[in-house]
Amino acid sequence: MNVRLNKDQKVKVLNSQDIYKIMQLVLLRENKIRRNQEHF
Image 1 (tube, rainbow, N blue to C red):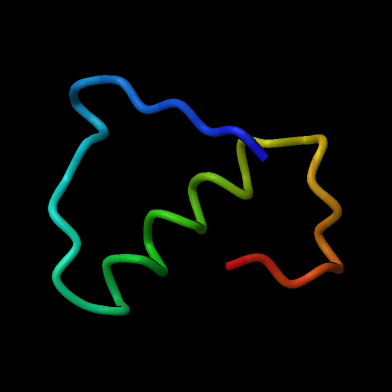
Image 2: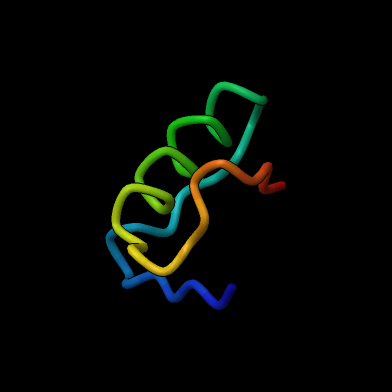
């Protein structure tokens, strides 16, 4: 998976909750990703 962020989407990751929010948005926007598979 290759994900590109624009300038507004780039944020500092300080904890696992930040990662969760980011990955939720990424996975929802990517239709090609198999959603029943774990991603990290």
